[in-house]
Amino acid sequence: MSLNKVLMIGFVGKDPEVRYFDNNQCVANFSLALKRPAFRSKAGHIVPEQTDWIKVSTRGEVALYTEKYVKKGSRILVEGRLSTRTYTDKQGVQQYITEVIAERINFVDYKSTSSNESGN
Image: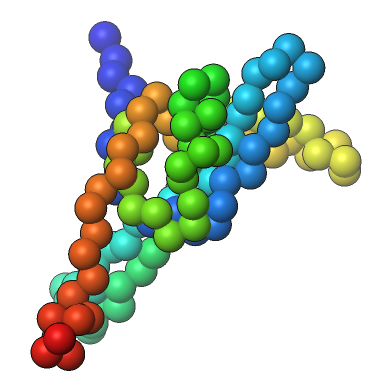
């Protein structure tokens, strides 16, 4: 038995790229920013916060939803599965792409604390 399930909450880096195909199928792709908090290494050094950019691909109804509602800066929860595919580039070298195939997307409320910090 195996399990291939991904859950992520992050910010969309830029508006999704949407493509339609002759068979009326839709695909929307975007990258999701996931922050890793700063920490202190075993040697005592501070390792600063880092951001991982994860490729996300949506298809069918999820792609149509993505096209309509998901925008740069949206804070979303992505539920899906991990997928790896290969292709041969123009130089004849085999390339690998790992991405999350989103099966569900939900918006996550995000409230900026800047107004509270400034006393407003």
